[in-house]
Amino acid sequence: MNPETTVHTIGFTKKTAAEFFGLLRQSGTKRVVDVRLNNVSQLAGFSKRDDLQFFLKEIAGINYIHLPLLAPTQNILDAYKKHKGDWSIYEPAFLDLMKKREIEKRINPEIIKGGCLLCSEDKPHHCHRRLVAEYLRANWGELEIRHLV
Image 1 (cartoon, one colour):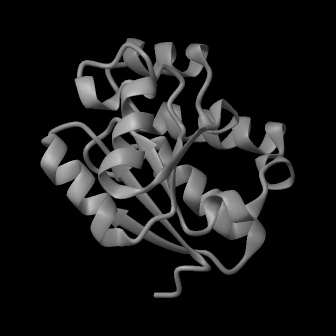
Image 2 (cartoon, helix red, strand yellow):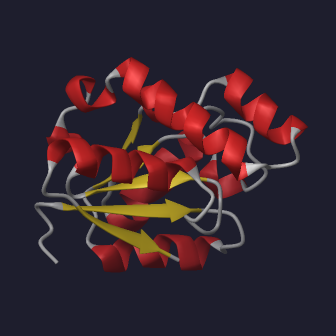
Image 3 (cartoon, rainbow, N blue to C red):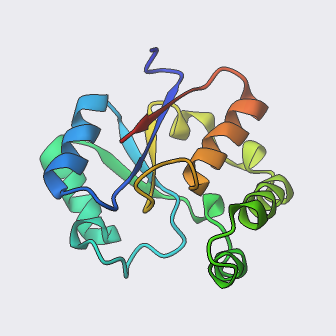
């Protein structure tokens, strides 16, 4: 694993603060890239934007950035919930959104490489952070993805 070409991903759900910050510290990530649309009203207290930024810096010396460009729209989220979490509806809608936004041209690879994409889902299988990482790898080339679970 080359830290210069690796992007980690993590979700905070079903993790204690100790587990969450421990995984991040052990990964060697330089910054957490928050890809959530809603990052101030989550149930896990340590993951609210301002608290998270403070804890990351104090506990692990990790920087924080919020990139809503990498988040789904409220309409996509609502449609997903309306269809009881039907991934076959969500995934193509989100992939199309990233393509239309041309995120591969609008995001500096240096922000992502060595960073860790943050979302709420505990596992990456049905989470947009995985889709973001895979989309960027497909467009940028050399990008190793490592999910912290």
